[in-house]
Length: 309
Image 1: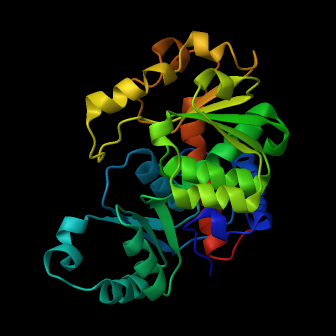
Image 2 (image 1 turned 120 degrees about the vertical axis):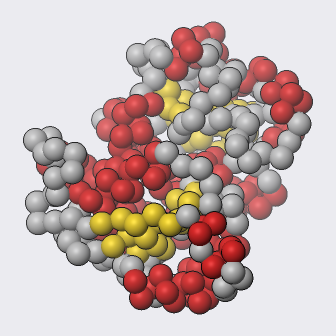
């Protein structure tokens, strides 16, 4: 049994096995309908329990399809229907019930502490579907997409992030250290990564640079990553924050500083941080990126169950 809560905790050799399996499974599904099971239905009879404390579209759909295509089933719980939130039941007791009824638990939460507590008390694998500090399933899938499109290892590419310092960037930083790729971060100085993340970068001596000038961050980039500047649960002055990010809006002019064949990726949903002319261009691979979540999350599930082929 393996948990999947943060890329920092998973050996790169294991991450590589997940990516290899995802590639094989995607290739093998070309003639199958969306709800047909993979050959052998490796997770037949298994139940994935999902709980979303925050809004979700891509993660919800992709995990549902992932477990179905592996031959299992998914059950989605609403936190406001559980005793955990309404009746004061402890995480420990809830975790024991989940462990008795399900085979794996996927949690999207607004609390890193809650994620850690569930991990402590569950006797089944837990998967982090997004927490305040990381979004590991998103970024591992993004590594898959980058290598699929560029047809080379991500370690051979120059990656750029333009946007806020958030959970997605934290996982991208962890991926940079795990997979040893150059990462340039472009963000206003007021929105640089926090001290803990900066310490993590420094201690690993990786090629991660932070720029307050978006043009410098874009120079020579093979891949441009971004995310919504104003997240749903941001407790910030929206107008003030958007003003800080005006120079960081990704448009054709800013894209011109990257390589001509660079691609644009965005984990969605999008906001004003990217111009329509970029988002809808041939360089944008956001729909391929979103669909790949299914393939990679299937392999993450198999990894958690100790069934990677």
